[in-house]
Length: 86
Image 1: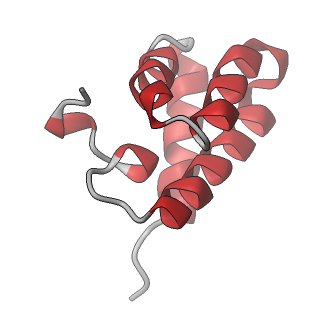
Image 2: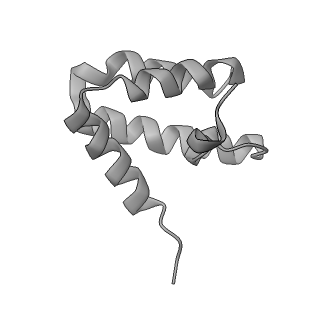
């Protein structure tokens, strides 16, 4: 179960499966580019979560345990790429 406060990006409730997959891939690319080998386990979880929604909560947990600087870079990049159009 994902808390409401963490329902963003691919972790949002009631997403179309194709949209969830797209958001997971976007987040995985950011994790890979921002963290390199330090984020390998998280990137792998995000890849597997594309096929198994049961891995969303463990993926979110792994994201929150990243080093604070890595986590901030990932969140900032994801937010910048997904900000609403004006």
